[in-house]
Every structure is written in structure tokens, then in C-alpha cells.
Image 1 (cartoon, rainbow, N blue to C red):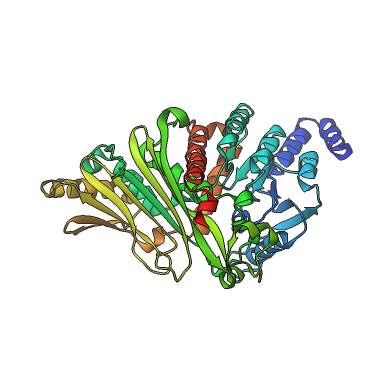
Image 2 (cartoon, helix red, strand yellow):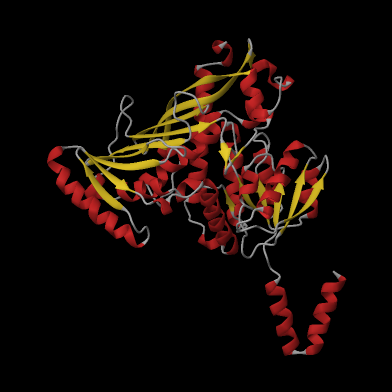
Length: 467
């Protein structure tokens, strides 16, 4: 405070020229300052995968001392030490048992990156907004429908304070979903969305994830607490929230969804994955199941409820979401997304077609053979119009289907898509008026689907009945 007063006094004595220098100096020093809160998984480091212009390279980390923090520091070190495009992050580690209260008290930054355990996350976000932090928080924010009113109130409070409160949305930068959105919203190709039914949903979205997944080129060990659904939620509350956010983004772009007026959750189901001790060791490096998981152990295997489905209507359109976790050698091809959107003229799909990265391909399937030529012509026009933004796209006529050939340079890694999501978030932080009006309501809506679906699945299939 004394040094700031001294600088101001010197500038005032120097007159207008000196004041101009002072303002120039302070504007250059206005880099955004990051704080990382309890970085417990690999997502916590993704924001720092690349250098961020206009962001200070000094990041303060508030966390308890332990293996999660050590793993995070190692990831950042690898970014700094890589031969291609190394970063230059510096970490200021502030470890203590009351690390969160210390963060709130010291307020040593502008943006808090939240990626810790799910239980208690909503209370953290609420407190951060109260202290006027911008928040970039990974899912899940809430794991129980009872927390939805608190989420709604926190979103409103952030809006009033012109704070940016967002979740990473890397799927919005994935080329197959971008193409799907463009094609679904072209009436000459898709027509209008049909309502579908319980037996034949108009929209189906499926995410298949690998338990033995990889981040970049390194296999990532999972923390044992990841499998504690009391702390990290079940599959639908996490991966399912991503899927639930995609449906309105594609069907009703730039429109706000009201969770209770526009959504009706009809049914949900869950089934456990049985994880052997050997598999658990490969996933976590823990040779025994921790005591906090003993209630979920049946025989010699851990029963983890990661697989879910939920069926609901979105403005009268039947939507079905499926979340599946699998091992690399499982019969379910893990690591891909699939989607089906049914319209009055055609059906548009994303299909995982194999390969190490389970890349997706986009297909247009006309409902009637007589309309094939018209739909093909409309698809060609649409893809040609997208050529300025996505050069190299091609339309291939494959009998009953029309396939969109996607050049390799449009296929971004998860880290690259996360970086684009982070860039957009930072743009919003610098100018909060640019945040779309529908973002807050649609974030609330997707957690309404995820939490209500999880609750309905637990009521339909209690854990004890699965033993």
C-alpha cells in the first residue's frame, strides 16, 4: 500500500506526462491472476496446458499437502519442460488444513479454477462468488437435486456482480458436434425436429469413456476417491451433465431453457461396473480397496455405479442419454461419443468408427429415398458455405447415407479443445457483457437433468438390490 501511494505521489508531481506513464504502467500490469483450488485430477492442469496471453504466469495453489497436489505439480512441470512450446508457469503453493478459508481471506487472484471433489463444490462456488471471484469449475457442480436452488441463486448473484461463472465445454469445439449443430439447424437438410417417443427417442446421445483412460500420451492413475460416489457422484451427474448440455445447444441454439417448464424427466436406470482388485491396482496403484469404499465391495470386486441412462423430454422432444464407462479391452468400444438426431427430412448421426482415438464421423440419412437427391444437394451447399471456416470438408454419397469427410487438421485433441474453451472464458472475464444470456439457465437445466436422473435411477434400483 505504501509503495502504491508513493508511485501515485511521484506521478502527480510529474504532471500529466508522468501520470500518463503511471497509467501505462498499471494497465500493462493488469494480467489476470489464476488461483487453483485443490487440484485433484488432470482437468485441473488443462487450463495451463498452454501459455495464456494476458494471464500472469504465477499461479497460486491452495490445497492440502498430499498425492493429488504432487501429481498436479508434476503435470505443470511437464508442460514447462516439454521440448515443443514449453510453458513458463510458476506455482506458489499455499498448503494448509484450512486452505479454502485461507484463499477467501487472502483473495490473491482474479480467477479460481475449481476441480476438486464434487461433494461440497457448490458451497465453494457460492463462497467464491460472494468474495467476487470469477470461477472456472469442472463438473459436477451439484450431485443432488436439493442443491439446485443454491446453484440458481449463485448464478443470479454472479450475473448481478458481473462475475463470470462457467464450466469448461470442450465438446462445443469438437468438429463433429459443430457439424451436427450446423446440419440439424438447416431445414433443407434436417427438416424440423420430430417429437419421438419413449420407445424411439428423437435424440440419443451416448458417451463411452475409458476407466483406464489416457491424458495426452501418458496413462493417468485415478485417485481412489474417484470411485467414492458420495464424494465424486455417479456417472450421470458427471459425464451425463456434458451430454445434457449438448441437446439444447444443438436443438435450440442461443435459446434459454427453463428447467421445470421445458424439461420432464421420465425414467432413469443405472448398473454397476465390477472392478477387480487387480484392475483397481492398475487404475489407482492401491493394492487394497480403501476403507471408505468397503460398503461398495461385493465379494472380491468393487461395485461402482458409473453407467447410467436417462430419458426425458426437452420442449416435448424425447431425449435419451447414455453414460458408459469401460476398460480398454472391453467389448464396448471405449473413448467415443455417438449421437442421433431425428428430423422430418433426415436423421443426422455421429458414429465412432474405430481407431486409437475413436474418432467420430458425421452421417446424414434421408428419411425417404425420393428425397435423397434434394438432401444431398442441400448438404453440399451447407458444407460449401462452411468451407471458409472449416476448409477441406467433403461430402461423400454412400448409397443410403451421406458422409461428411473431415480433414485431420480439424480434429483437435482434448487439450486443444479445452484450451479453446478456456480462451473463450477469459474473453468473457475481460468483458462480462459478452456472456450469452442463455448460458446460466442452460447450465442449471443440464444439472436438473443429471441430478433428477441420478435420483430417479437410485430410487428405481437401490444399491442393495444390486448385491
